[in-house]
Length: 299
Length: 219
Image (cartoon, rainbow over all chains, first blue to last red; front, top):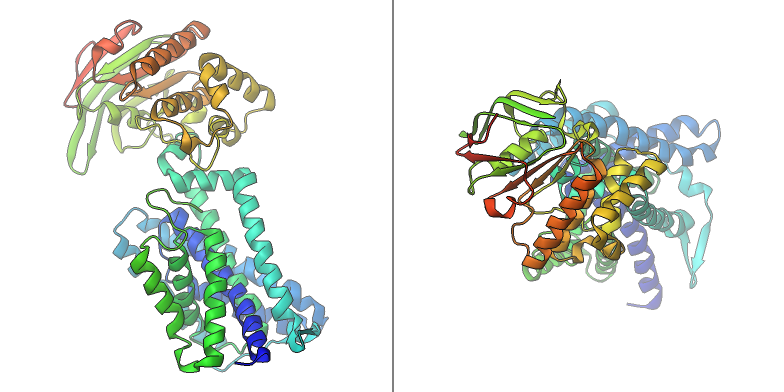
């Protein structure tokens, strides 16, 4: 592998890792607090992408620069509206029930949302690449790459990581989320409304998945199935890091993003295999994940 | 202060509390004595709203059985569970202050209650900056009491506070309860315990619970 390909692989890996991190940290956050593995998390990623593309196509004729806030607005809409409705009416009735029931419910939600997505946006690919075109290309050691992917996406991921940690550590809402994560009953005994915490956490997690989808939408054609691909990969990242681990999800997303990118250039037929091979090896050696701890849950 | 009238609780099909009735007068220290499985912890959890209970539970004359669990601490009920259950993501002082933050107490009221907690439990001041996950079991019980005091303006429930405490720590804990009692003559304390001797020196009322029923001391 020559140096140009290596640089390309690194840039591919970093930009892809940024998207995977956003989705997997949302999945991890939801699991850490609600103890639910949300299979429909991938649908929230897909809805974020489709809503962002739809909004971008609407606002681009007014001003192409409006497509940037459109990405954020899409993430907020999907997180608050879709995430809020999903938590309130589909997940709340199954809290505390058997894990398998929760898994089946979220899987059913995933299938329903996938079908709804086909009904709303059809099956033809949708392109909304305006934000990528607006930013210039940058040269990294002589290799040209879009600033959107190599600067903006990693910056958003880093800001999300720092913002999330600050939110959880230094705000009352974050402290309350940490308290419920560790001990729901003890938190209730000091006046915390755990149901509200579940709702807000789920909306944040859903919003992060949707943000990943929204940010991915200008870089790819949107087609049915994109949610399924992402939930499997983000689950691999979250499980490899240890469910509930925020910083761990960032490191693992980078590790899996880079290894996936390198394998595409070296042996492309192993692209799908690498992340899951890594996950299996890690989980066999450390069942709680690379950064996970036994007993005490962290987020 | 607190009155249970014919309270029934079943957990997973097992009848744990059976028409439980008792009364805690204001300013009293009540010991709820019983063996393991007698229903002491379920009684404490029922006051906090963590069980599906039938019957009447009144606090200062107000029916609270329909009040959501997260709204009960704001009624002036503090609860220190048996297994301390501190939040390890925070320091000791952050654990103690969290109820005040959640209850949105004013800065002045928070300061007043924190000072009271430190006066009752001087050890907490020394531990203030320590991560809550790093304190010993006995110290953790002190922190849990401090946290309960931030909310327990009318009633403080302590579930088996002496269990597992080294004799020196048990003595300090008892001294803290005496300081609390001397500081606030109106506050009601409900302390569950399996060993009646531990509480006989400062309990005004002793209730004995067996198989979910008060068999001695109810009035």
